[in-house]
Amino acid sequence: MSGAAIIDDLLARGLVQDSTDLDALRARLDRGPMTLYVGFDPSADSLHIGHLVPLLMLRRFQDAGHLPIALAGGATGMIGDPGGRSEERNLLDGETLSRNTAAIKVQLSAFLDFEPGPFQARLVDNRDWTEPIGVIDFLRDVGKHVTVNYMLAKEAVKTRVASEHGISFTEFSYMLLQANDFRWLHEHLDCELQAGGSDQWGNITAGIDLIRRRAGASVHGLTLPLIKRSDGEKFGKSADGALWLDPERTSPYALYQYFVNLPDADVEPYLLVLTLLPVEEVRAVAAEHAKAPEKRAGQRRLAWEICALIHGAAAAGEAAAASTGFTTATGALTAEQLAALEGEIPTTHADAVGRDIVDVLVETRLAASKGEARRLIAGGGIYVNDAALAESRPLEAADLMHGRYVMLRKGKRQRHLLVTG
Image 1: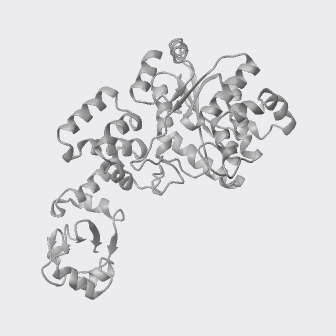
Image 2: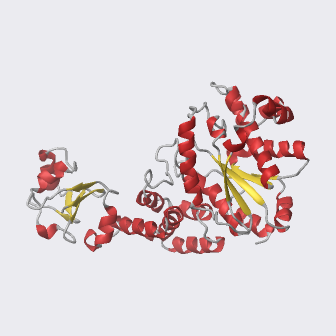
């Protein structure tokens, strides 16, 4: 893929927020393979869905024949980036950072090809070259090339200085550390492009300027827009309902459910930035979806593609199958689909055959008391396998789907899976 094609693809997807000269970057890409990097913050033991945008950008460049570097910020993570924050983050200890960095490295490996070859990706940790530097050496080799006025002019620093919390010298120094990362990668691994979220533009340009001053070289920078949730908030670790890449923190089913329930307007933009589907195919999916949006075909394709990228096609298929429990008549669900729902929706394991439904409703907390359970049944608000109960009765063997499952429902949406045996 030519340099123009790569840049045009990013532009078509809406993936360019700020950049150095794009024509110069196109020309450099046309000359042959280029090394680029993105840094990932190890302040948690998992990446989240917001990281998928820069991670897939590295993948897009690798697929086009370039050499990506994924940097785990073991050193910068000990400081904390002031960008996009109103107050200083809590500093993590070295043991926690090491554990987080190791977990993130595993996740990065699932998206990039690290096998030996001409376009092999690299994993690096900036602690490897930052920790050996003494304070005096750092001030002489990095600090003297950057003025305080220059740093204060950066939006992230300016905003924090003006805030009620101010900015500590610790976080003020973050820009210098990240600039030095770009310099080190340029000198040792011939890295010529740094990319990151739009909140990283000040740090990226500081690195570009440091390389120009230290090596007299011209390098490139590119930022990607921060994706937003439907409520306008960015996807992040501190936001309520963060979507993690670790399946223990956000299951494939929960991830699938989030995206399958997105508004129609989000389908095309998210297909463009959160999947590897070609732009033309995205447009076709969006056009087909627009013909019958009530079928939610666009959301289902989006949810499957994202789950498959993060957890593999098998897990995406299981999540999709389990999801049909909310769109398909319960009696039509297969044993595999019901098994996939176990634990993903409220689930109780109990031998309930022969027990009165009133007692079961209290045990599963669909009703707070027996009296409430009877009132719900009398009002037609309790369903067993989608059939409304007219009166209380014992659960029977005939109620078991595939010999072991009963789907209880309170009202239209509150479901509880009862598993026997």
